[in-house]
Each structure stands twice: as C-alpha cells, then as structure tokens.
Image (cartoon, rainbow, N blue to C red):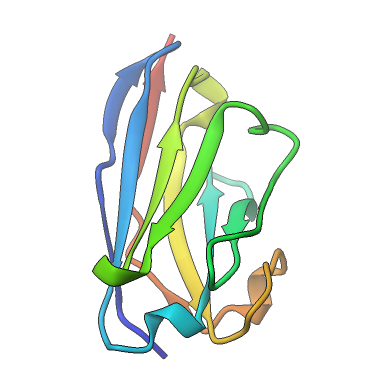
Length: 124
C-alpha cells in the first residue's frame, strides 16, 4: 500500500475549473494504477477516471468525458485531476485511490489505498 494525500479542493462557480492533486509516499508509485472517485451526500462512491501505472492509458466515466483529465508525473509521485466546465452536480468529496497493478481499474473494491478526500463544491 501507499499513503495518498490529496489537495486542491474548494468552492468554484459553475463553468469554472479546479485541479486536484494526489501525492503518494514511497518509491514504487510507478507500479500503481490510480483512480479518482467521488461521493455526493447520500450516494455511492462512484468511479470518475483512472490512469494506468505508466500514464499511457486513461478511462473516464461518461459523465465527465471531455471535461475532466487525469494525468500523472511518476517522478513526482503525483496524479492530477483537471476538472473543467464544472457543473453543480459535480459537488462531492473526491478521493484518489491506488492499487498495485499495471492497467486501469474501475472497480472501487479493487483499490487498497485511499486518500482522505477533499470537498469540491460547485455553485450554480
């Protein structure tokens, strides 16, 4: 497992942008696939986007495709989530997660390391 620390949450108006960062501990971060999930009040924690350990492959949920971008810098042990054209329904706690595997993982229960989850609030 790795320890994950997220940053970059906050309040933004609809149509605006935010970038979340997920910094990992350890020297083996490049062996971990990473995903971003979000959980709105009273709802399940849902997959948003994921990236392979190399960073070559990504996969997005249909609801964010074309507006959210995941990327990683393995030299800095950090994964980023760029969120553009934000909508009020994107309001949620956002979690990054990691699992030691090469490919993209979309199933929440497959991840064994989780960050603390910063709040993202999009006002209308």
